[in-house]
Image (cartoon, rainbow, N blue to C red):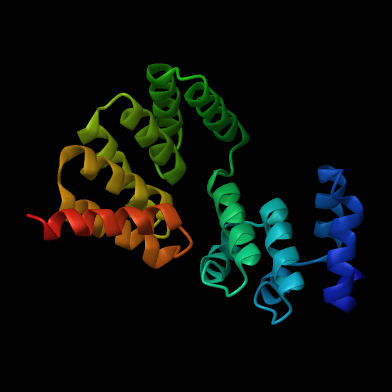
Length: 217
């Protein structure tokens, strides 16, 4: 079993099989438990922490979210990045393949700037699974692009009600409040995003700019 020598074998396994993601997933599932990987995530060895974060992106479930949120504050930046990437991946899975496919369809509509169609797609996601936080978060993005501010705020708030660790929704809420000229509310939302994920450099910079504006009132 690979996990008998976690540090060297996990990193080797990932390196040797990184070109074949499906094969790598199966090897990880066969040889490592989530408990193994979450323990490695907090290793003093940064290479092991990075590898564990990468592995959890591929095979992690909602059970590992608290450990990944903690890893956002790791001293190693790559471990933080891998933990963030893993969180986004896990948040995008509802447990229903049909819902997940609809979510991906909506994301593709967003990329193609078909914002109203994206709203309709994400609304179907939400109607199918009302407790799936990412459906609301993605619809909030579509509403933001359509400049439907109150609807975007509503969906951001619903996202964080379902998933209080969703730094992306807090950041999105801040963006909407900026557009509305509600600077204090924007700063509060941005700060909440940073409490969860202190690696959001652009959000930290936005807070500094907004504070400068409030000081000049």
